[in-house]
Image (cartoon, rainbow, N blue to C red; front, top):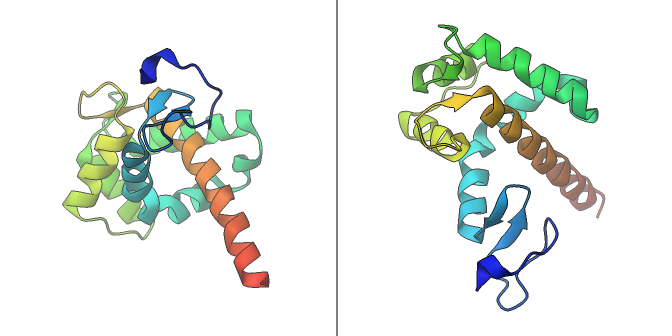
Amino acid sequence: MLQSYHGSEGEQHPRNSSMGVKTRDGWQTSRQIAAQDKAWKKSRSTLMDKLGTAADDTQSLLTAAEKFFKEMDADGNGQIDHGELKNSFASLGLQLTKKEVNDMIQEADGDGDGFIDLQEFQALVKIEVSRWKRYQKTSSFCAIA
């Protein structure tokens, strides 16, 4: 069974590589990973611009993510809702559709309450920075070739 295998992060399940991938938060299917990637892809560049050089250091990244979270949390209730997420990115020049915002919330919302809390946002930011860096390496390689 998938749950009985305890591989390291990033490792694919040995019996069937399409079954799942070991991530920091447990096993995820390729479909789950692709859905997360797609949901936040449009906003990734804007998010990285907002985080700036904090992306180079874990503690700075978490601090910057908390600051950005507090800016987005317009009502100060400790959660980002659909409107706050949409308005925050709009203020940064990125217009998101209702579906895009719904997908972003769904993929970041770890506890299923329909909102993004600080811990969920910080976890998301770490994932997005990792993706950004990976895509930048790939893009640089392709541009040189």
